[in-house]
Image 1 (cartoon, one colour):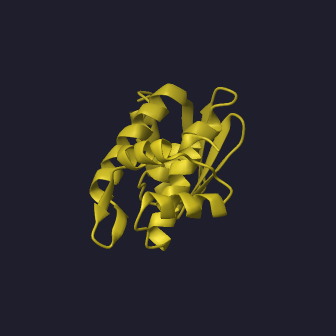
Image 2 (cartoon, rainbow, N blue to C red):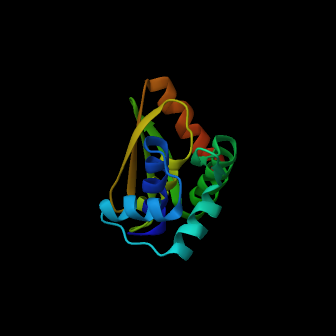
Image 3 (cartoon, rainbow, N blue to C red):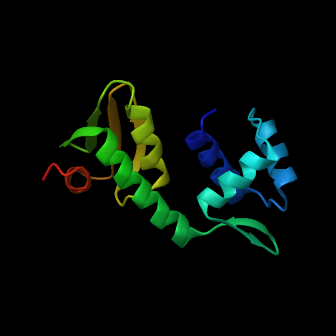
Length: 148
């Protein structure tokens, strides 16, 4: 499992469970088929902006939201070739093999109006709530990518 997918799983686990230690987190990851060393978990938690509270590990929503947006912008500039909307769908085109990288960053970033994403080899489909949301999101991606 690559780092982006591991981060996504860690975030899901932290949101759905009380995780009091890295050992407990490592057990939860293992139960989901992911092996990780203590060093890897330590780096992951630091990179994700995870905080250690008296009740256990928690995601810092402000920090993780800011980092996710910054990471998304970098990923868009690195991988996206074009962005367009069609009805309630936003279509992001990438070089072959880059769509899943971009889609993973989209899933981590808070984007208003987006309800889900699906990646192929060179295309990311984003499902928007309304056609207007789709147009606005496509415009956001065009601006992030320097297309406009």
